[in-house]
Image (cartoon, protein in one colour):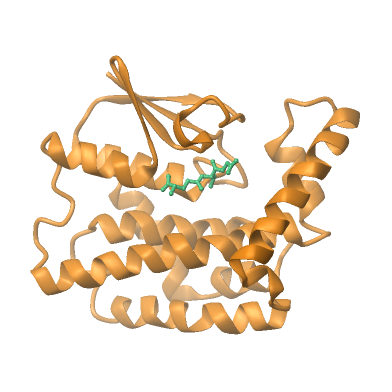
Length: 230
Ligand SMILES: N[C@@H](CCC(=O)N[C@@H](CS)C(=O)NCC(=O)O)C(=O)O
């Protein structure tokens, strides 16, 4: 039995992290038997991040490495795709994980009205008074990282405009079929849909959460993908 080390559920999602949800979707699709083990603390796991997959005496960190391991052990996520579609799929995955994800981070860690809710959800296991002190430094580090990455330098309005073409690109593909690459869910859906779901689920009604939540095509796609990946 495989064990997925994951952040606990949050804001109506199976995990606070869209990368953990992606790993759950891939595991479900792979047919492997697995169980989850929740922790709020990533520090002792490979790469100091979650998800991680515990396989007997080996622990694999990073959802992309988990995907590779599952594929090496019989799973096929993109079986129906041409080489051209596989290339596009790779680009959509990168768009979701290396761009959309950071907008979720900024919404959750950078917005002063959202942050207290996020803090008290993510760090609920720390008693209230030390929680405020401990997380202050953590928040500063995260937001400094976003400054370095660059998106942290945009205003909220600029950020919304920056995300819009990505959402349009996803929507254009969904006009062609129920999933990004037609009638069957593939690896790209396992990455993209959890990012959209996390965007919509951010508490406190940010401009971005409203944008995704009020979009019928994107919302239906999130639900459809979650049902397809069980
Ligand atoms: N590339 C990694 C990203 C995973 C990731 O960023 N996880 C975040 C939560 S969404 C994390 O554990 N962050 C903890 C930290 O950076 O300290 C993957 O695909 O698994």
